[in-house]
Amino acid sequence: MDTSYPREDYLPALSHKREASPTVLVSPPPRDHLVWSIFNTLYMNICCLGFVALAFSVKARDRKVAGDVEAARRFSSKARCYNVLATAGSVVLPLLLVALVITGVIHLSKLAQESVGFFTYQFSSSDDEDK
Image (cartoon, rainbow, N blue to C red; front, side):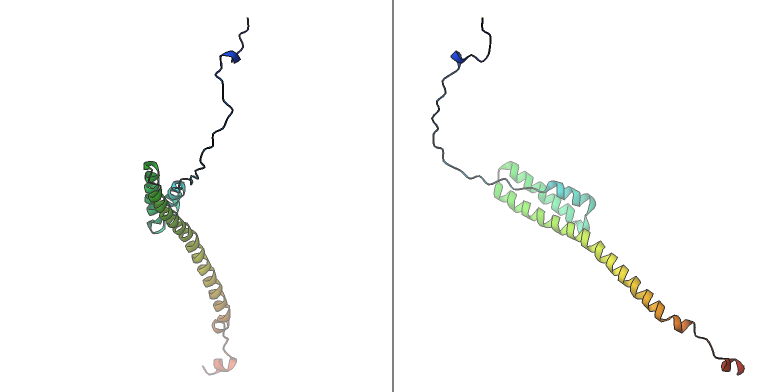
């Protein structure tokens, strides 16, 4: 008795003909940048740009789920712009501040070295005789 499966005699006959199907190009759904927005909201929330990006990311996700791809693309684009601004502002501004502090310290140290002569002025012995 043969109990092997699947049994070939009970399988339906499959046709090997392929029907020509029209090629439909489907664009990928827009990205909502939600993870990036959450990161910017928690860690790089300069001028509340991370929070604004999070709001547009949530709107983009809602529109994508609802099937309105064009509105999802617009909201996604705005979320990406606000995320870029928040990230750039949070990275560039501290670097600019550090550069300003370093140049200020260098300038003050040079100024102090140049003015050492002024504070270490020694009076001549002729000034002591006048007293």
